Amino acid sequence: MFFSLLVLGFGSALSQEKPRFLTLNGYLSTMQSAMFNSLSGPFINDNLIHNRLNLKGYVNENITFGAEFRNRLFTGDMVRSVPDYDDMIADDQGWADLSWNILNKQSFFLNTTIDRLWADFNYGKFQARIGRQRINWGQTLVWNPNDIFNTYSFFDFDYIERPGSDAIRLQYFPGYSSAVEFAIKADHENNVTASALYRFNKWGYDIQFLAGYVDSEDLMAGAGWSGSFGSVSFRGEAAWFQPYDNFSGAAGTGIFTFGFDKTFKNNSMAQAQLMICSNPADPESFSDFYFGTLSAKELAFSEFTAFGQLTWPVTPLFNASLSAMWFPDMNGYYAGPSLDFSVAENVDFSLYWQHFDSKTASSSEKINMAFLRVKISF
Image (cartoon, rainbow, N blue to C red):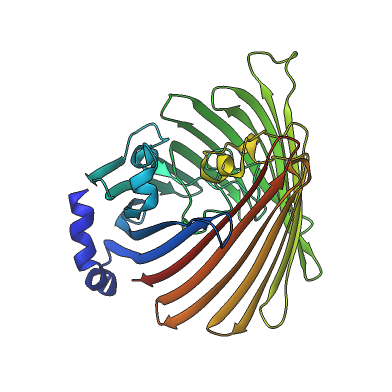
């Protein structure tokens, strides 16, 4: 922890030198946020100072290692008024507890988390990685039922690296476009996820099949693909989760999602994705899945969900985006415009707004969240 804070002061210099045996990069950002029901109501204001450090070492051409840190200073209304908010941030879902609140006061706390810590060995067509790592088996861009090791929330835009797992991953590459993988992880409750995957290329598409055991609870089988027809990309994933302890009696959960995206000549992009689920999760509110920890079988909150997004580069330095989701079973929707402006080399200014609205027979909910962020990369 103390080492990660010291490195911050020397990060720029080291990253410029980039010695062959060690590289360092990362970023420092400050983000002001406000949460409110309406403009006329009360606001919950918070600030987050976020520093990331990515260290990578090269022992030789066959052995590498990595360590990545998140240092986050939280201040504001959530810290002062929400019970156990600091404990929620410090909660580590991995097998090893690598998250600490190293300063914790009434109005602020400082959290350090190690979300990558791995050693990698490769020889010929074989590769093995052990430790906290990102195992990304997803093929689509929003919901990933194949991503059973590292499920993430689309709404968490400030965590582009995504969570890691305490895992062992073995890969064998029989050809330039095919791979056989096996991975196993354990979480903080010693639940085990283990799965094998086979990926190959056919008809211009990357196709994969996988099967395994998820969270010591479900047997899982799935498939995914990504490719294109003409200038339009076509991606999809499907997965079935069946409870292991009641294989024939309990109802399983099936998730099928597919989407299209197209990039135009001016580098603008249009994207659409649909998701169908046989047994969607039943959150009490939007905040349950916004702040909660999702699993791959809990991605859906409606039997049918739709997503669309349009990204437009207004100028080479100014980018605008609008995304939306529709949740019919919740009579709800999400809308999220954003603006990104490159102020200078490695300095970005961003504005995000997230709006959630739902109406059910028993309750209605409306949440607005606005974010203003300045980010410096090194």
